[in-house]
Every structure is written in C-alpha cells, then in structure tokens.
Length: 328
Image 1 (cartoon, rainbow, N blue to C red):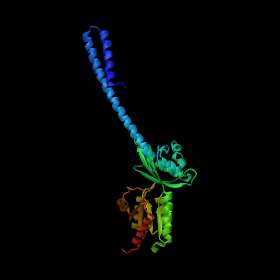
Image 2 (cartoon, rainbow, N blue to C red):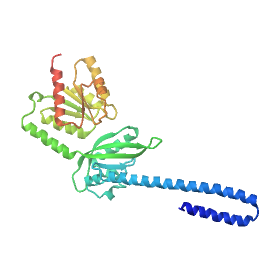
Image 3 (cartoon, rainbow, N blue to C red):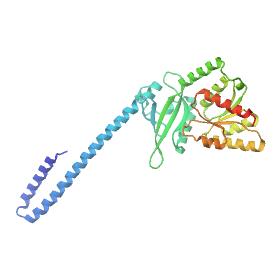
Image 4 (tube, rainbow, N blue to C red):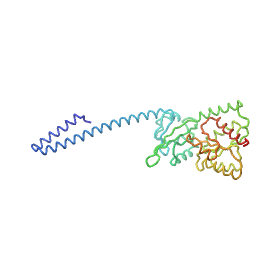
C-alpha cells in the first residue's frame, strides 16, 4: 500500500504528463486537473478505508485466536459438530477423555465414540434437535480408546442459520462415571452405618424416565435404602403398570418423547377423580430452567433436579410417603 507522499507524487507525475500532452489548452487542462484532484481525494479515502479494514481484520483475527486458545484449554470437554454429529472442532479435554490425539477427532462422526448399544438412541437425540430450543441434555456412554465405556452427560447448545436450520452444535461433555462410583460408595457406607430410616423399608416406587442411565441410578440409590423400585421408559408404559401395580410414590421425568410427564400426571389425577385414591408424585428434570410451579400445578407434589445428592432422592420419597400416610 502506498503512503500519502507516494500518492501525491504519483498524481503529480500524471498531471505533468497530461499537461505536456495538452500544451496551451488551458480550459482543457483545468477540467482535467479538477478531475485528477477529485480522483486523488477518492483514492486517498479508499486508502484510509482499506487501512481501517485491515485494522478490524487484525483485531478479529486476534479475537479468533484468543477464542481458540480459550476453547482448546477450557477444562470442560467440548466439541463442535454439524447437525449430523460430524466433529468440526474439539478441545484438549475431550481428547484426553477419549484417550486419542486431538488431531484424530476432527472430521470423525461423534457416533463412532458412542457405545454401540447407545448409538441408536444417540442418533434419535440428534434427529430431535431440529424441533428443540435451548440447551438439550442427555446421557450416553462413550468409549475411550483402550478403556471401558464411561457414562457421560451431553449439554448441547444449538446454533442456527438465518433460516432456522441447524448450523452448529456446541457440546459440553461431562464424565459421570467417576461421580457415580463415588456416590454409590457413599450410599453403601451410609447403609452399612444403619442410618436408613426404618419406615422406608417396604416402600414401593415407580420411576418413569426415557433415560436408562437415570432409571438405573435412581434404582441403585433407592434400593440401597430398602425401597422397592419398578421402572418404565414412557408415560404409556407407566399407565399400563399402574393398572397392575400400586406404588407408594411415583417419580416421573418431565421431558420425555411422545407423552411427557405433565400429561402423565394429569391423566393419573383424572383417573383418581373418577376412581378415588391418591398417588404421591414427584417430578424430576435435567433442566435448570424447568418451571417448578408448572409441575406443581399439573399435579405433582415435589420437584427435583436429577443432579442432586442421593440423600435428596431418599428424603423426597420419605416425605411423600409420610404425607400420604398422615391423616388429613
């Protein structure tokens, strides 16, 4: 790019060459000189604009580098994929979690790292994202290289283009296997220490959740405290189970494919209005923004986030069972 002085010299040479050609044509020279003056001003303005653009580009490049560095060394395992789950970018934390080089991840389908038994459900989750809003959460087992499968939680943020189509998925991956093992050990030690309230022995609970990992975890926590547990994966299955089984407490996920937890509890309360009886029920959710008031209004008596301590699950069941047995 030429400096201001070089620009002036360049136009001066042009003037001299044109003046030599025009000779004594003074009127013609004035017109040409005025046009050259305007052209020089325009050129200088363009030069200034280009310099400003270069400064902006340099700043944007630096910000992009800063973002990339932050992403790469972010402690939470993170991925960026397209709508079909093809990995576009990944950070060091997810590479360590999967025990593979960072360069190996980019360009691979995320599904190849998902446990074979979980792949169909994983693809189902991906397909549902086109109709979803906000952060989506689900659990799946990943297979690190040369290691046993691990239970993880995916938190998926959806980036769309101006037409509303999915452009990118930003996925945070949380390793739940270590925390689950620690919680199981804690629950077992509590049991051995005979800290289980005796009234819980013999209680029966029906758990409704489309996530197999959640069903297994809740079963482990409650059965360790002497509570009998049956589990189903859908609202329809829950209604069928209630035809032949009368639990003391119902625990139901709110967001499930097909009929959700809100619809399930409304149908249960409608049955009770016709047939009598009352089943204490608690709503559970993996979403921090899930509306507790909405769940209570639908017919639940309690509302619990899935990531609370195991003791909170037990306490909730005990309270609901106690309320049901207390005289009004």
